[in-house]
Image: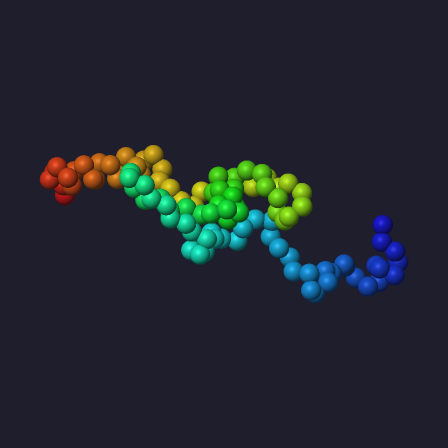
Length: 105
């Protein structure tokens, strides 16, 4: 319960030096966090370390800490990358028609 003196000052405001940090990433990590690996089967580009965990939670949803030592927060799934099943089928059909010379016109 607030005191009469606190009520007279108005609503509580944060100290100006305390910046509000949203409890979720504001966008995908930058390219400096990428790592590339390759083997005989191909090339793979993905995020490394802590950034990989943040990207995975941001993409697939899940539970993570909003800040170090903070409370656990459940994040909704926000799929940013990837193809749906319908997209995959359409790409496969277009590729097949292109390779066989029976292009869709």
